[in-house]
Length: 408
Ligand SMILES: Cc1ncc(COP(=O)(O)O)c(C=O)c1O
Image (tube, rainbow, N blue to C red; front, side, top):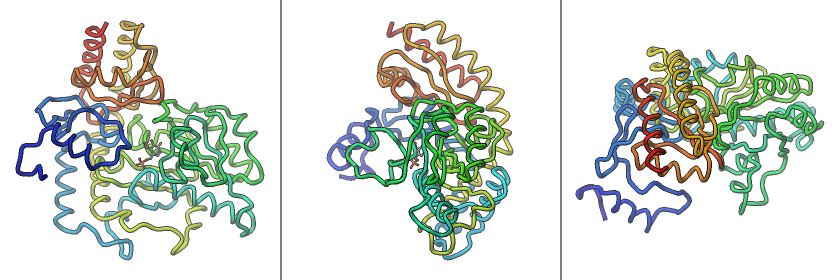
């Protein structure tokens, strides 16, 4: 059946999914067909304020004119050539990321899991070098409890959660896990075999749990003292969402490697791994690669995202507006103490801690016209686009207030 001639309806699309698409995702009961700014519309023309942003992807909201123009022009000129050739936009994007992360080099790929996979391979290469060229001596990576690093075998093995790992064992060897934000636990987990420590600055899927400044600074010192890499997963919290381009900047540290994706392309798939100078030449020709990574179209999209972040001063805007929004969310929590238990996060990477199953409240808010995402077992993530207006931030608070009032 083709839906191109007939009118798209949520029911028809759901039937196609039911029959033909793998059932590995839980889904909202409607199809989104259009987006503009901070809003999306479903096939039945219902409008939703989108604070899910494709799970922290739509940095500029939907249909930003500069992003559209850039992607359209690039699509018309050149879409794909492979990494057998230089791509102008890739070189320019790498330079812009190094400007923000520090001296080093960038590897481009297509997703967060792939960016992290590059970091995990970097840890192996670093460990081999540290062990005088011997493989299998220094190869362990320590990750945190409640973390999430992706669904590839490396990403799953780095993610000590039964709901991620269950059914897929045996996993990749060489991972140890220690309690998040517990420096002593990380220190205790380190051995002569440890090549790297790998943590999220803010645990996103785990429910928006920020790493403390003391923890990140302590990890930096520990890694320096032990000759281990400090690798930071910024896939969800990076690219301006917290009011810093990279969320770790607030702690004043410099990592040895960064994984990023999601918000970088603003809706076009792209991932990137930045590696600090001194480690950036561990990868040699032929040691890693991907066909699509850093293609002209993806890099045009990512360069457009950074253009707008710079030209519209979005980092300042996130910092200023989120401070006011946080006050509104605090008021909301005081007004609905039976359902809302607290607030976690920074900037536009926020979680409302809820009483009961977060999915029930996600569905309730959705029915009142607000899209948000579950975070961990006890929270709802609110992740508006960086371009959101103050009125839209207030509108989200009003929808939650109304929805909780109706459901009381
Ligand atoms: C912190 C973090 N790392 C890695 C990933 C995996 O990214 P992707 O889904 O693009 O593979 C995610 C996805 O949610 C994430 O939040």
